[in-house]
Structures are given as structure tokens and as C-alpha cells.
Image 1 (spheres, one colour):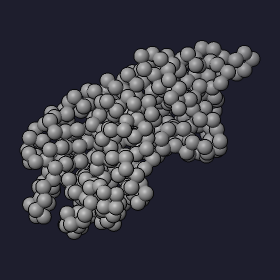
Image 2 (tube, one colour; image 1 turned 45 degrees about the horizontal axis):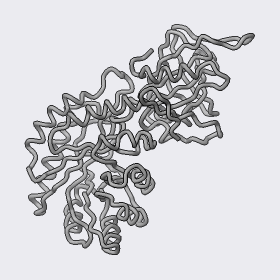
Image 3 (tube, helix red, strand yellow; image 1 turned 135 degrees about the horizontal axis):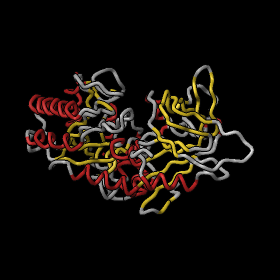
Length: 407
């Protein structure tokens, strides 16, 4: 059994295996999640705060577990504002996303959102109009799409043309507008530039770039930032799960870096999602059949990319382990593969329904269950659930050995 799948989730799956219905579920170890996040937050130096980016996984049991551990939630839609407030009416909420409707802005103000991350001059006008009309003053950070250079990463939000933020070349007019409009208060800058970075040194270098840029804007435009949001972007290694981002090394360097930040930067915000929740989740899918076609061994599971789109979206072969299931139906053949690479596919009518490719296995049989580790982030949340109208997977949230069907 892979060490990347917690014992409590492995037992949960084993208890369901061999029944009349094929196993297909997401299992979340909430105790492991809480332990991981406590350690992450405890290692942060003074002035640094960790927000949870809800887009990674907005299931209510996940949010309830994280609410007392993080500084607040980062949201990117009106729907996420509502989910956050359903968990806690007072928890700080920061509102990002590339475009926000006037209705979302008004509702966010009504719900007491802490800050808006502003992506354009038009959005500044929308927030100003809504805030003045409702008697609010909205704290805002200007999100800037820096020119870079940045380390290579799976996804880039800045340093190249994207829909995110205000072009660095246009930051001057945006600053002047922000300090002139009624109903808004410029509290600082938001600089989320990449996703799934695995190098602590590269991340520290990027934050040093942020320091130089913001100090330059302060000197040029006569403003003082109180809050710098450095985004998320800290990654999970899905290729070699033993080589994860070294958070202790990073925070040691971060402490030295933050010592050089101006003292009036009272708050340095991180907004991580994947890094916080990926490891707590497992996607379990029973093997329904095994085929050999044109020299390739295919393992076909109950489920697929309509449940777990992450591997197809990120174009990687997702790590899994095999849970052997001894029982089998009498009078039926039981196909198997031993000591050969396999390609794991789902039940959809498309050759793109692939979860793992050319993956080495010792042995796998029909009726065994595959346990896909690091499935707690951007798995169920980003998947096309109702394609072909297959059943949804069970969602089980486990804490202290007790299963909670959750939703």
C-alpha cells in the first residue's frame, strides 16, 4: 500500500470492496488535513498569513476543518462567498477572480468581505459605485500582471499575456485611479503569478522580485502598501510524490526575506489551495475489466475523468496504488496483469478518459481497487460530473475513524 494514502482511507475503501456495487468514491482524511495545515501555518514567520483558496476544494467538511486553522478564505465567485459565509459569518474573506459582476460585488459588500483583489480599472469603478451606493468603503488590492521573469511552472498567470490582473505597464494610471475614487481604499497589491511551483528557491526569488516592484511603486507614486498578497502557486509533485515542496526550507528563507520588507507592510498574505488539501484526498475506483489492445494493457475502472479530471487537465499520469481484493464472482473469468505497465482508463466513450499512462504495477486484477493519491484538490471540483450520466462517486469525509457522507 502506498504511504501516500492514509491508513484510515485505505480501511474505508477495503470495507466497501467486494460488494454488489463497484467501489467509486472520494475519501478525505480530515485529521490528516488538519495536522498538515497546522504545521504549514505554524512555520510562517511574523506578518505572514495563510488564506485557503476555496477553488481547490469547497466541500463543506473541508471548509469546516480549515476555518479555525487559516487566516480566512480566498474566493473567486459570488457562489464561493456564499459557501464561505455558510461556514462562518465572521471569518475574513478575500475576493479575487479575473472578473466580478456588479451583483457579486454588491453581495460581497453586504456579506462583509474583507478585501477585493481588483483586476481592471473598470472593476475599480464597479466597486466604487457599489460601495458608495451602499455606504461602504471597500479595501482593495490591485492585482498586477508583472513582466517577470518567473520560474517555469505548469500554469503561468503573469509574465505573459493572460486575462489576469493589470498589465505592469499600466500600473501607474490604476494606482492614481484607486486613490481618487470614492468608496475604495488602496490597501496594497496582489501578485499571484504562477501555479504548482515545486522549487522553494525559485519561490523565494519571485517574492524578492515582488519586494522590489512594490517598493518601486511606492516611491514612484507616493503610496504606502499595508498588505501584499503573494498568491499561492506552491505545488504538489504528482510525478514523484516523495519529492514534495520543502515548506520548512522555504519558510526559513521566507523569514529572512520578510525581515527586509518595509515595516509598514503589516500583512503578507498567501492564498494556497492545492498545497493545503491535495494530500488529504484519495480517489478510489474499482477495476471493472482489463483489456489488451494493440500492445497496450488497459485497466478499466468505475469512474474516470468525469469524476477526476485533474490528470487529463494537467496531462500527467496520476500516482496510484493497488488495493488487492481477494473475493471474486464464481464462474467468471478474472483478467489480470502482472509486472507490466498499464494504462488506466475510465468508463467514458472517449479515448481521452485516461487517469494514468504506462504505469508500472506488480499485479492488478478485475475487482481490485485503485487508490489515486493526492486527489484532494482540483479533482471532483473541476470535473464534468454529468457527462454520459454515470453515477457520481460517493464522498466520504473521515475524522477520528468516523465516516461522514458529507454531501
